[in-house]
Image (cartoon, rainbow, N blue to C red; front, side, top):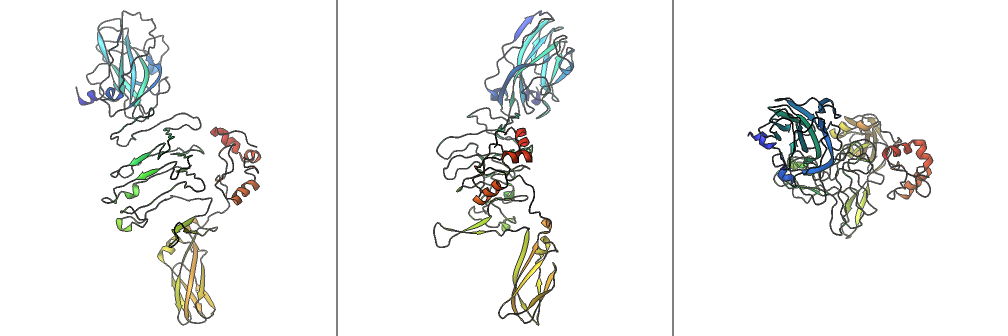
Length: 518
C-alpha cells in the first residue's frame, strides 16, 4: 500500500447490512449509523486530528432510476472499472461547510451485477488498495460505514468512487463531517503544529445578528479570560495569539469583539500579548502584534468606562523595560499604538509624564488642535548687517506644501522692525532694522493632507441601533451638541424623526438591530 493510500485509509465499521437478492424497486431507508468514538483514532491517516460535527442524516446520491436523483448524483449505475466524482458541498444536503476535512458516510451497493468492490477516496487523489464495500455476487444489497477525506484540499469537498470488477448502483448517505477548524464544545483543547491554519477556528454561516465564529465566556472572580491567545517567545513573524477578520458587510462588523463588564482593575475585553524573541532576534519584532485589527469597519474597537482604557498598547525595547526608539536594533521606531490611516478621538489627545516630586500625580499636556494638518519648525538666528537666512530642514521640506507657509520672527533685546523678504521651502530670508539675535517659528501644512475638510458627513456619532442611548463617555458639551442637532432626545434616547430623515432606520432594519425609537 503506498503512503498516500494509507493516509486516506477508510475507517470501516463492523456493522454491515447485507440483504441478498433485494428487488431493484425496493426502497432502501436512510438509517442512522455509528461514528467512531475517537476522532483522533479515526482520522489518524489524515493530516491532523479534528472534531466530528453531526448533521441530520441526508442522502447525497442514488444512482438507481426512479428514486428522485439526477445529474451528477443520480443514474446511471457505476460501471465496472469506472469512477464517479461527487461534490459533497454542492449536493442537496445542507449544513456541510466547505472547510470539512473528511465525511462520515454510509455507502450502499445494490443491484450488483456480480462479485466486486467499491473504493472511496478524495477527488484528485489515488484510489490506493483499500476497499470501502465488498460484495460477493449478483443482486446483493450491502451497506458499510466509512470516513472519507475531502478531496482537492480545503474547500473543494469532493470524493471519487470507483467500482471494481462488476457494475453496481450506489447510494451515499451522510450523517456528519470532520474539521480541523472548529471548537466543538467547552473544554475542547487541541495542540500541535498546524502550519498556516489556526489551532482552533470557528466558522459560523448564520446571518443572525450577534452570531460569532468562536465564543468564549468566563464568570470567575480572578484573572479570567473569555478568549485568550498567547504567542510564545519563539513565535514566528506574523504569528497571532487571537486573529480575527471581519468582512466589511456593514456596521457592527468586528474581527475580534471583546467585552468586559467587570469593574475589577486591569479587566480587558481583549488582551493580546506578543512576546517576540527580543534578546536574540530583532528582525521579526515589527511583525509581532499583541492585538492586530484590520478592516474597513473597525480593526479594533475598545470601549472603557471613565477610569478604564479602551485599547492599551505597550512598546518595549530589547530589554523589555523602556519605551524608546529601537533604531539601533534595526528599527526606526517602536509604537504602543500605530494606525495606518487617520486616528480619531472624541476627546483630547494628551501625553502624560510622571510628576517628578509628587507621588501619585501626573502632568498632562494636550496635543495642539486646529483645522489643518499643520507642520512646523522653530529655532534661533542672528541678524548680521540687517539680514539673515533661515535654512529649512529637509524633513520639513519633504512633508510640507509650499503654499500656505507662514513665518514669525521675534527680535531678542531692543525692539526692531523685521520682515520676510523671501519665503520658500529651500530657505527663508529675513531683514531687521538692527543686528542681533532673534527667534523664529515657521509653520506649514502637510502636502498629503493640504485639502483636509473640517466639516464633513460622518457616522462617528450615529446611533448603532434604535434602542441606543447617548454615549456616557462623551463630555457634557458633546452630549448637548448631539441633543441640539437632533440625534438624541433630551432623555438620551434616539430621535426617531432624525433617524427616519437620514435613513438610519433602514440601516438598522438591514442589520437586525431595529427596535423602538422615539
